[in-house]
Image (cartoon, rainbow, N blue to C red; front, side, top):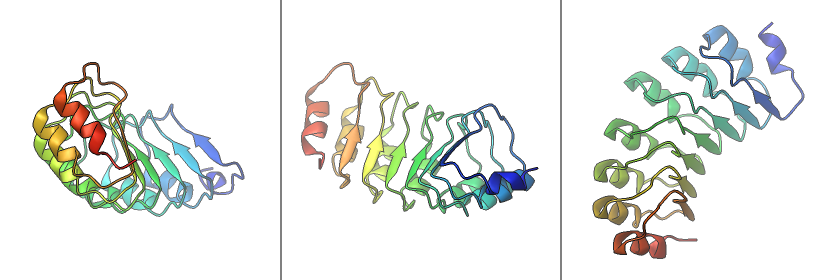
Length: 178
């Protein structure tokens, strides 16, 4: 049955109800030629599933249910070949995730579930070579984190959740390369 997923002719597959994904399902899913794959109910991803999914060549992958990543899974995640990777289930970005994602070759990276961004992960992410970085869950940003993100050379930094604009936030917004 899983092989049927690879032959689906539509451009969008939503599997938001699944909480677990086996390598046996991930492998044929990675052969699917659609654009958007949404698996927001997935709460963990082991390395064998990540190894299979990194073969998928779609445009956007939504994994909002994932909040933590093992080192081996992270090593595979950075190899994903999608343009947009949405990790909106992450509430806090550990150094290991930021350092790894700074090497990811995609264009759009979303961390809209993050409510607080520490300075070190912000520094790592400021080295990411993508075009759009989203932190719409942040309600405020500290001076060090804002300073680090202000050096990012991408095109669009979204901070739609910021509730109060202080001098650091204004400097960050003014320095983004839109």
